[in-house]
Image (cartoon, rainbow, N blue to C red; front, side, top):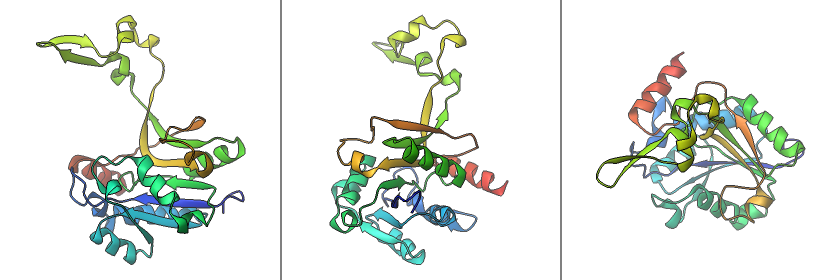
Amino acid sequence: MFLKKKILALIPARGGSKGIKFKNLKKINGISLIGHTSRFIDQCNFFDETIVSTESKRIKDETMKLKLKTFDRSKSTSKDYASDYEVIYEVLKDQNVKKKKFDFVVYLQPTSPIRKTSQLINGLKTVIRDNYDASWSVSKIDKKFHPKKILKIKNKNILLSYSSSGKKIFARQHLEDVYIRNGIFYIFRVSKFLKNTNIFLRKNYPSITNYPYVNIDTYEDLKKTREIFQK
């Protein structure tokens, strides 16, 4: 329980990753990415239950070692293009999960293993006390990579501004701050989530990450994460 609310930790761990095969089982300091997420959940010490959503026998074997509960994904949510919303919704609509009446679900992707409990705790406190529907961990984007500065190539190699509003930008001072979700955590109020059709709930609190992190997609990302853990 956290501030008298029941909290579910949900770990998505599909076995069919394209970039790095069995990415969620890759190890850092001898511990799998799922293992690091499990350790983080233990450190928080307020989750009422933890579930790993997967279709993979190898990942199920790992979750058994970690003494975590497993949810068997359907064929549709095991596909390459299954959305986060579909993965979460499938678990929350399961009868065994519904009867436990969780107030919030915290979605923890193993591929973002560098986390601070203080950021999640502050996010949860804000969502509960200020009646938000959700909170995502986000990172500020360097203005060098601002969406209004992005270009595209069309029609026989003609260079164009990706956004029509980009043509009006003449200096960095004209650019507002923009952010990207980093996968460290997502918090959703279950009652609001189940009434929605995607993860973009109406009242979403931005929890800004102010420490080094990596969202692992490539072997280079994995190498960088290992370097950060060594430090």
